[in-house]
Image (cartoon, rainbow, N blue to C red; front, top):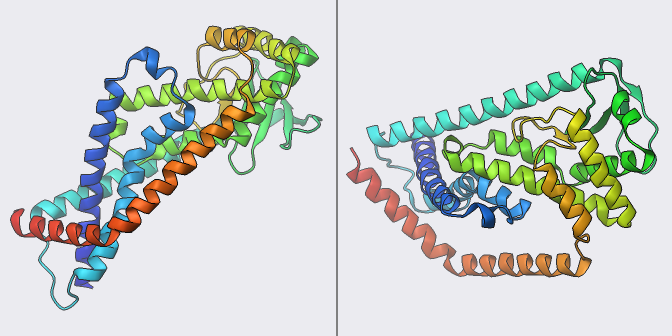
Length: 323
């Protein structure tokens, strides 16, 4: 039992140390990136940066420290629980609890908002969207995608009346793009990720940037299946909806709305001026990502065993030198 408790304490301490280091690196890179270059980043890259501290910390503990501890640490003898390591483990535990609470609160608020909207919901017949749709009554026009596993599209009667059939179809296609990209899950992940980066200005920049990039991606995906007339209809719908619909604060709740992120003027101009992304460009991007993943996996395979020994040695040094 002492062996396992000691290992858990060290695991939490390593989680905190990795989290601090990666959070600082991400914050430094984000703060030194100009707004012009920052605005051109893709949604997956911004999401990766936002979740990198917690993801790197979990992967390091699970794939490096735990195997190292299990392989090299003697079962019959373990060191005591040093004050510094115990405090570090307690801080990591508090970080995890705080992250869970933030995610739970965001999810609970989203559920409450969805319940308020669906009190007077009526099924809305829409062909080919793949998710249930409902017409709701509300004082202000709203079009929102709620839920994660069982997503629902909610559209107020006022918004349906305000848009032409072409504009309504383009707007619905936009929300379906959010559903297919699992954007609500990504919003919840950013809200509930356990890291120190969330306390910095860099995290807010990344979240706002991701919200803007996600809206542009949904615009492009929605417009990619239509002709220029469809893209113009979506641009027209954005202008109308922006005047009528209350914008939700990005990344605070797992809810996607038509104007919930991004600057409307730039989105409209891009829809009018730029063609949708080509399949060839998407294939090149996917191929580059696959190559990078394969190279990283190969590198890790060659260095994994020495890395385990190095981490165990570093752990022993910390245990013996820290108060």
